[in-house]
Length: 412
Ligand SMILES: Cc1cc2nc3c(=O)[nH]c(=O)nc-3n(C[C@H](O)[C@H](O)[C@H](O)COP(=O)(O)OP(=O)(O)OC[C@H]3O[C@@H](n4cnc5c(N)ncnc54)[C@H](O)[C@@H]3O)c2cc1C
Image 1 (cartoon, rainbow, N blue to C red):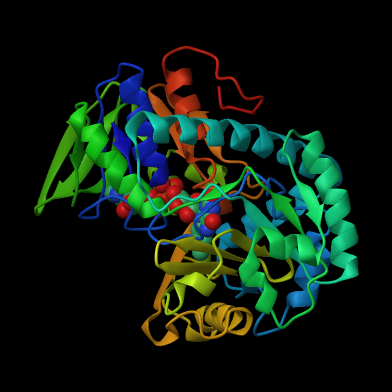
Image 2: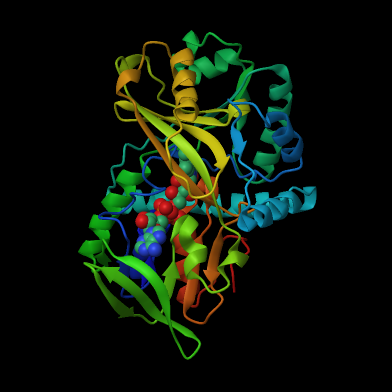
């Protein structure tokens, strides 16, 4: 039984079925991918394995404090989970820990992109994907020098990148020619991709159904069923009735809500980090970027999804509050209007917010849970789309008693 039908849950169900398991997926929504996997930045960003918790994060965060347009907003509150998470985050900023976490994420991300490509080919999936890479935009010479160092580290991890000057950027993405701001260059990760995560998940649901996976929507999971110290199913409320579904194994893929269902769940240290996106219909598609972009200094990502642009970013530590904040999502729209003036129909933009299920190290929990029969595939934070296929494929390997390929700290 897989709890949750977002990116993590549906990919888990698919690979578990491929490994020979009978699978039922349960979700409280009426369809798959209606929560955090609904409208993310669209990037398959293997070239961004560096966790948010890195040695320069404390200085950057202090610099951003109090700035309305800062990529990070923290509302200090009496929330023990937030303070525990913040302390653990600070510990993960130590150089040795950051390096270890970067290696783990890079290994899983490389594997995940291979799994995604194989799956796309096998099932002829169509999810407005593009395989034209990601340009990480560097605005000044300081960023360019940092980009040089980053490119060398990424290449050493097996992630192919090259540094481009402005004319190189414009060759890769001609739409950048009209950018009014200084552009010192970009780190170009040609192997990266982009695509609509919601479409991908919903397409995969169709294929999973056709090979026998069952989906139980509109069902709220209220607790685990534990029998003799083993996870043996879950309690659900559906159509006003409480019932139990038994299972030999339970996989938790509930995004930011995962800790609520796992015994001793606070130890998972998953905190909801809120982000926003705007999806802008294109007025002049021929002038809009085709290549996915990352504005490094502002942590904004931008992906072409068919005849729309998806612009996403910002991080807020404000608990489970999903309320709209027009000044935050408006800043994303303003960024797009400034750099690609007149290209989109801003008045028709769709605003969205979601909660990234984020661990302090940015390393997700994949593998055995704290009880026999309980498994985890959760806590993918800002890289849940990038890491989805690989995490799920590895989880299925572990549950089938095999050793997954990537060098990653799977939970045993
Ligand atoms: C603004 C933003 C931009 C992002 N951009 C990118 C990007 O460009 N690239 C990238 O790789 N990642 C990106 N991400 C991250 C990525 O979207 C997430 O990591 C991913 O969607 C998490 O998937 P999930 O399956 O773990 O969680 P979810 O998609 O939230 O799935 C969890 C599921 O559990 C269900 N559920 C929860 N509680 C219960 C319950 N009690 N009973 C029944 N069902 C329940 C929910 O309905 C939901 O369907 C972004 C995230 C945000 C917010």
